[in-house]
Length: 324
Ligand code: KG4
Ligand code: ZN
Image 1 (spheres, protein in one colour):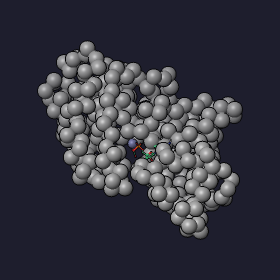
Image 2: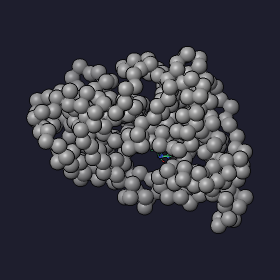
Image 3: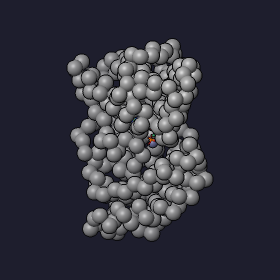
């Protein structure tokens, strides 16, 4: 089954052609990061306008890289939510239009479920597994019992992990989106230089706002040009990864689930990937998407459209939604 999928939930306009949910035939991503950098974050109206300008371009890019014609596509898919409403509308309406023109089904997709499915691309992974999903907007531990049966075991009660990364990066004068640069800085620092606290919350919760405040308090002790950014980044990264891995491990052991996977933009984090890999020594099978499929992309949307599309009576009437 050949699916053409579109992604436009935040600041990446993307299209991908994927076979049977696992084999990427071709894909294209237009990142708006450079545009939003000037504002220190994503401006929804600006993002929506750029999606509108780029969506046809990314679709044509995908077809330029292959001999496959639009008439050969079996279904058209798009992210329906959660995300920025104006942005989601662009991808959703483009995919609905293609589905009407070529008389093939339209499959709406949940963005978070798509991040989970990034793990199926170029891999043999099968449920059941525990997924640690960490992105700019969400932090969850999910039990993926089957392709279309997912239970949320834990989620954040305040900031998402990527959001905290971006905020702490900002405190260190690192431009948006700071996560990836903070990760690079952390690799040069001493993770034991500062002892940042771990939030005392329930087994089903994450909380990161206290950690963010603790970092801010430490930073304020230094003159702006003397902030030990590398040590701050390393100590922050150590604490956040420790918390994430510990809680994921707790739930995996509780459910006696031997496979753990990572997903979401923060799944690109070097320390998190390393710490996850170390769990293999304890007998766990671990998996993480290739770096290109961690941050927003359309291949994961196509995979999700194949394995776990949103069920609706008439998908052409299905609307975008901003919140989970
Ligand atoms: O999944 P994603 O592309 O967008 C959402 O769905 O939210 O995730 C983007 C987030 C940003 O907050 C970005 O700073 C973070 O992922 N991120 C990272 C790394 N690469 C991206 N955070 C920590 N370490 C990284 N290497
Ligand atoms: Zn995302």
